[in-house]
Image 1 (cartoon, rainbow, N blue to C red):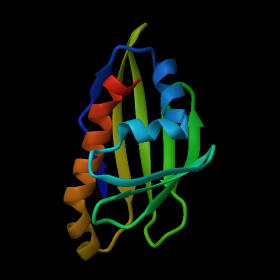
Image 2 (spheres, rainbow, N blue to C red):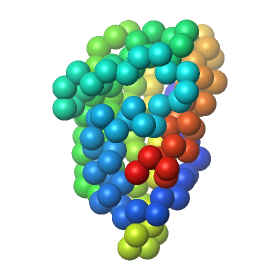
Image 3 (cartoon, rainbow, N blue to C red):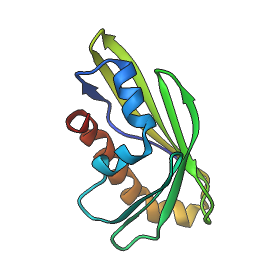
Image 4 (spheres, rainbow, N blue to C red):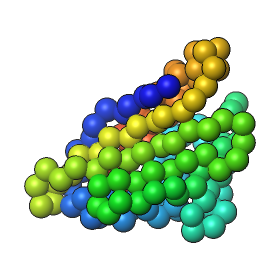
Length: 131
């Protein structure tokens, strides 16, 4: 299952956006209002939970400065990645798009598609004001 957030424009350079997304603690600023738990486990890993959903641990998997930040599931029953693609528009203006990619059976995919789509849209829409 591959889901993409809308592309958002940020009045920051790709390097500034990359540095922000590379800091695990900054993801707390991007989380939706219905977050029930957020905990930094170490410099590469954090745990979060949304109300009514199980806890999820994400960790940094790949960093390609200044264009790509990849987070992936760290344990648990589901295997997925969340990739931030950063594109330079001008020297102090960038575009960011988040892409969720996971392997799920058809029933699970049907159940989580709506909530995950809303989640990545919220994360992306919060990036411009959070940086």
